[in-house]
Image (cartoon, rainbow, N blue to C red; front, side, top):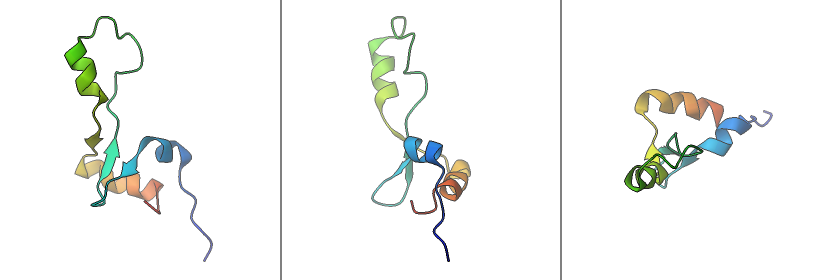
Length: 65
């Protein structure tokens, strides 16, 4: 059986935790940061677990995750 290729775009955006859950970054922290409060920017910096509805889709893109 040949090796499966992973989607490189997904590989750059998602990683797995020790328990096997998938983690992602939050959106809206790239630019236009002056008008956002410090608390909002700090909250956007935290990683968050991918929703269960999307997790199977991400696992399909990353077969060895």
